[in-house]
Image (tube, rainbow, N blue to C red):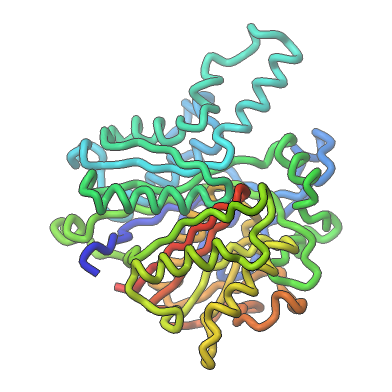
Amino acid sequence: MSDDIAVTGIGLVTPGGTGTEATWETVCAGRATARVDPVLTEAGAPVRLACRVAPPAEEGVRGRLWRFDPATRFLLTAAREALASVGLEPGRWDPGRVAVVVGTAAGGVATLEAQHRKLLASGPRALSPMTLPAFLPNMAAGQLALELGATGPALQTSTACASGATAIITAALLLRAGVCDVAVAGGTDAMVTPLCASAFAKLGALSRREDGPGGASRPFDRDRDGFVLGEGCGVLVLERTAHATARTARPLAFLAGFGATGDAHHATAPHPEGAGLRAATALALAGAGRRPGEVDHINAHGTSTALNDAVEATAIRELYETGLQGPSVTSAKGVLGHTMGAAGAIEAALTVLTVVRGTVPPTAGFTAPDAATAGIDLVHGAARPQRVRLALSHSLGFGGHNTVLAFTAV
């Protein structure tokens, strides 16, 4: 379509590795990254499993680490990779035509927790002067805009675990409105903290398989018992197609359509019939000018929780019931854990890579479905070669947020 948005660059910082190639290799190998986390263990968290980003993940910001929350450090590193991969350099563009849009579920929560412990232990004088600039929810986008010298819109989105995908949709809307030519869009979170782990455990959302961390996250599996808390960042460089063409940048794929809806059903549980996900899918396909039968692949939200996986599998099974084999389905959370507000952006990046490379990564941790998750073409065991012309990426979040991104091949 004439108003397609070109995806020209990708940057990733995940538990699978720092950098796009490292993450892609880990995800395609199906190597789970969950471990018993020493920080959560020391804090006495009721569930100690986590998928952590391994250091170093802060190239280019050494000597300034104290200024930034880990989520912002992940973002600066991922954005640097994404821009370098497509030859975009700060100082060699019109800064007023560059937008920054970043999604996060919790802002700089690691900083907030650490500084609150200092306050309780030693009083106000012990607080860092960077406490507010490091933890305020808008500051990841603000710091990235500062790093890039980008003076276009600098926005932060928060729709829980759909935040990264919401940021990509927001960036696409800015591009289509002519507000900018380039948008650096993505999601970042660093919620592997004692408070977050304990709060999710209280909700019963986390896997408790500490005796077998590598098999703890089991998207769509009959024995799934919750997700593993993760962290990381994904960044896409989005451009108006005409702008990319003018600078002879070759798109990786096109963001051809997108949909965002709300369930208005429950604070933490998805709509039992997946009504919001179905509606968001319809919007994304309509925007792309495509039909359900044309979808080749779905990168599912696939959290490894009882409710999400059942609802999502049912929606997929019923939406693509055409008498032919439906789209292949995968979830990266068996490898990377649930990276919260970063998940939608990380998984969008993986979806683009699937389109570009003709490979669908496996769903780690899956052995067999239950009655609710059966009947979908879930890729597991090993990566699958597949030509993918149209792929969808699902992201859902507490509060009833549903987003679907539709990517098409070049």
